[in-house]
Image 1: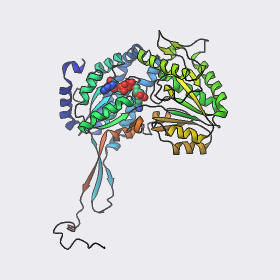
Image 2: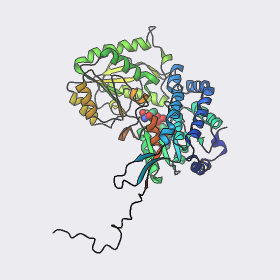
Image 3: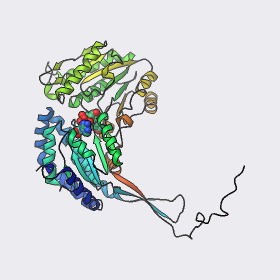
Image 4: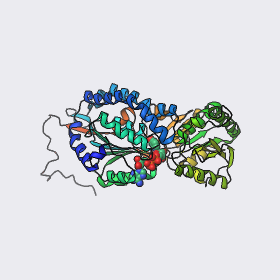
Length: 463
Ligand code: NAD
């Protein structure tokens, strides 16, 4: 049963708000119990998720399995193994009074609204929920309306695992999200575009609700004179085309040292042929289509605008209007005024820019919004250190792409234009907790130095 068919959004919120005072007191064992229940239930809906995503975005089943499903049990296990330790109050030594006891107590935030995107619609709705539950919160999930089959699977699945006072699902689009955003949630965890991120943050400000914004942006790729070109090209082409290029940390555009451009283009072509043309023609079954015609037309427009402004097509440039798929496409001689260099591409189009001096490439990145991810392909530690030190981004992977986001020993999130806050592993637990300082005064003699009367306590000012 879809929960918002029996409760209004307001009723669900009030029910959760009341319950959150109980939920925050749950022990590690009780929270682990909830997460284990979810883990045990997940395999029952794998088939439904695969069917739904095949209808929503024609994602290859292999990609559905490894991007949407395979990671969840391990994430739950990682949390369960550490939760008791994370929940412990941390003792701190006082800087003022050695006899005082100081602690930092992780406290649940309360009711967390999770707003999900369409590009990894199951995983990116469920994972923030898991993190919020681990931190002792109640959760309301609003999956993306652009993947309606997957949204519906989530709405039907959640009530089979959790009662509505702990987790509930509200399906819908802008109208429902706007209604939700009026409510005084204790925290909003939003994954989506920077433009909608601004709407979410503005709405949250009205209630002084804290936010985690997991946004997107243009993630640049530096390839210097020393890069191992085979590995570089294989990695870039793979990461540019997973999910049809519709990943927040896709390799958006390349900045290659001009001495290696030809070698890079040849290697990109070689790996594209290996991955997508092994039988001589484009294997569209192994690549998701573009989410909808609107975005397909947007990408076609970016491509055409780049060509109109002088770009050369190195390979690709084939658009399938019927299946709304785009073959992997590499363009060079791209004008910086092209729209493709102004907005997040979110599709398998890859502009290649060249530089002669690394500083120029760094300066170019630094004059734009801080990216969610930044990639460096280099064997030269001096160049690596320089790029890491002189640029700002949500995270960095060196000699590959996306791995800083897959390894849960690291926090994952953006900065300014690409988001704020971070999660994964203990960082997610902390993000969805309030780290409350608790000071228990020492038992030394009462110090009345600062108490009135003040006469005689004011120091004379030196003229
Ligand atoms: P989106 O911003 O269009 O939508 C995200 C959510 O916001 C959806 O649930 C949608 O219903 C809601 N929404 C849309 N318009 C709204 C409005 N006017 N008012 C209130 N709510 C509204 O994003 P998307 O197109 O679903 O996802 C793609 C974007 O998400 C890309 O920019 C991508 O980089 C980013 N993304 C980021 C991450 C990350 O972890 N940082 C992960 C995936 C996607």
